[in-house]
Image 1 (cartoon, helix red, strand yellow):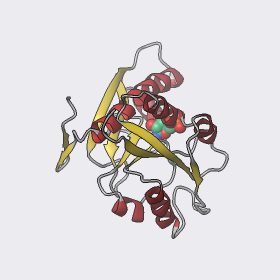
Image 2 (cartoon, protein in one colour):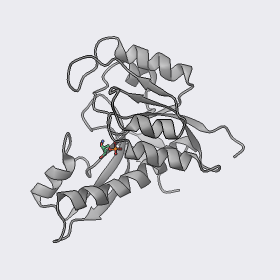
Image 3 (cartoon, protein in one colour):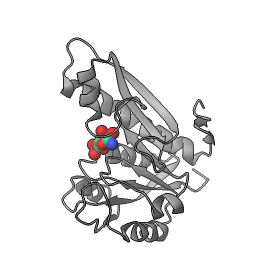
Image 4 (cartoon, rainbow, N blue to C red):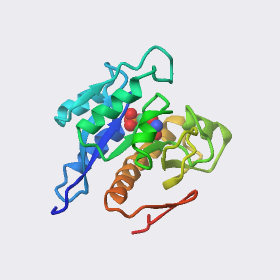
Length: 208
Ligand code: GRF
């Protein structure tokens, strides 16, 4: 690839399967992105082993004790770390803390999140269970830009999966996850190739 590749920071708190899917795509010589670092709030996150396997630098933040929130000052530290690593795009992939300050300001329009529902349905935690229990026939996942709202920023890509009679919550979760891995990489690639344009709530440029 001749043009410089877009440097991603992936933020993850847990298993890191979306992170791994991205890291794998980034190993392809023609892919438009590389993973510059993993940022996590949990020193025991399995995602760290994924990072080590791919020799990706890890930054464990001192996130503070409040569940779902970051302590004052943590976001500023994340911003300086990401700047040091030359990060151009942040991908939240199972990051369990809400960003509400410096990160969104410093990386305005450059933070995406993967959520396991067809937004705006089933925001928040356990989205797959919410969808399954509701009885939807189509479930899925969404990659969206992050703003200060909960799972509410402009939608970049969505993928739907059928909920069949034989499904249970676990099988649905697995079907959705496989689509997550596909669209999170595609969204990063579209961003890196400068295809995405945000007009109000609509994100254009996702068809090529
Ligand atoms: C995924 O289901 C993602 O949609 C949600 O958190 C989960 C993270 O899974 N935001 P993994 O750590 O990427 O395997």
